[in-house]
Length: 301
Image 1 (spheres, rainbow, N blue to C red):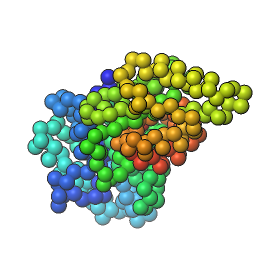
Image 2 (cartoon, helix red, strand yellow; image 1 turned 120 degrees about the vertical axis):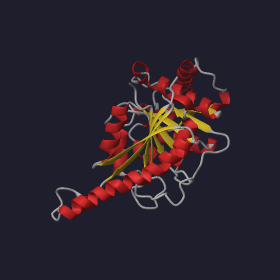
Image 3 (tube, rainbow, N blue to C red; image 1 turned 90 degrees about the horizontal axis):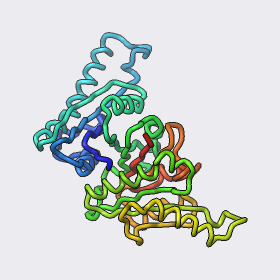
Image 4 (cartoon, rainbow, N blue to C red; image 1 turned 120 degrees about the horizontal axis):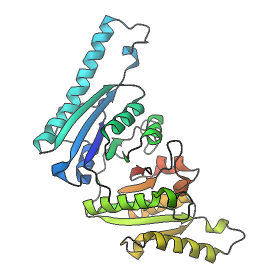
């Protein structure tokens, strides 16, 4: 089973929380909930900032700018340290990692690999200010380059519900899933999260049955049902929590996520360059951009 005991938490260093350090951002609150074993847990609070006017290549770069950049980095450290102090007082093993870096996503992915973390957590940066679910280019690049499990916090003001609901999106009919073990990874991880949270696990699989013009709709459904039964044979999941939907993957995932009020949706990615066709085909942008729950993205080893 997947365990989350070594977590990299990426904080927004452009927010100053020092006036209210006990009001933890959602990245920290949710990381704590996902920890499998507190005694062995390690939390890394990461701050990553950059200002173009303070960079070496900027036309007006000079001694004053060098000092300002130093002050900028020191300020980042102070802002991250606020939460390190609070978490340390609560008995957690915490360290800080602050970086002057651009592009930001490259530094996050690099640190995640170097520290060999179990999970990376960050709040999304909207592509459009005040947009509810649009991912920025930086977040998209992080999805592509980060080879560690990545939890994207979608709503900075929303906590998970009292009864935690986890949705695992799988596709047992896809040829890549069996050799890569992607569906098993998704289910193992979703199962562990559900156990840690004492929550409820749902599984969704979509298939375009109505598109098979040379096959009977019933036979298509039966083939996908058998594939789903085989995949879930090693897992204890209630029949009413298994959603086999004749629709496009995009619509199925979004509608199921909304119907069960999922707190976390777990999906798979086949490579650094593209989101798995096994899950969402060529419509990844719609799912990742507009899904309302927090999003855990996994890649096969």
